[in-house]
Image (cartoon, one colour):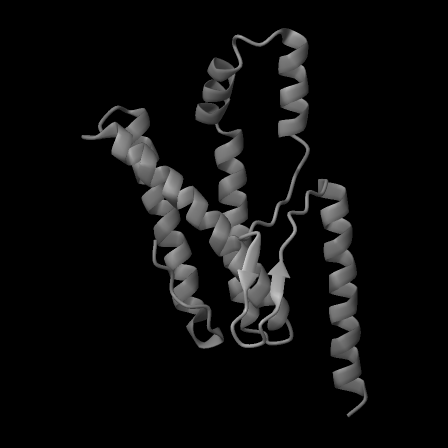
Amino acid sequence: MKWIPLELDRSREISEQVDTVINTYTTLQRQLTQRRASNPPQVEKALAVLRRSFADRMEEMAIFYQQNDLDPRSGEIEAGRLKIKRFLHSLETSDVSREVEENASAILHSSDKKKNVDVYNTGIETIRRNLLEREKTNNETTVTIRVILTEAEYNEILARREAIRQLKLNTVLYNH
């Protein structure tokens, strides 16, 4: 999946692309569930690639928004990220996902199944990147750590970040 580069001047195009890709995913998924796909394994692979692409794009958009959060145009980028996040969450909770999960866990004992459902529903936010990246400009090794948070922890971080952003904005507005 080739995404439009994240630039503030292209925020409207980026938003439209998010809608288009979500619609494409929905159409492919509908074809697969209604058994209208001409090549089901290929459609399943395309859906998996799109899911991975959504996750990667969400991360890119979050980083971009953090770097540009004082620019009002960045709000449209954040709205696109949240739209992708809600869409991915809806996929996880859809009937199709539940059916697949139930079929996959049918062989588990009921106590094991309960543990899996509890872990699945914890509201986890993850950040993925390559484990090691070599930066050519300054020859340092960068290690990215995978962070798993509960929904409450994630919301607290967002609230603190918003408070800091508001303080920065107030400083800019009232100290000049």
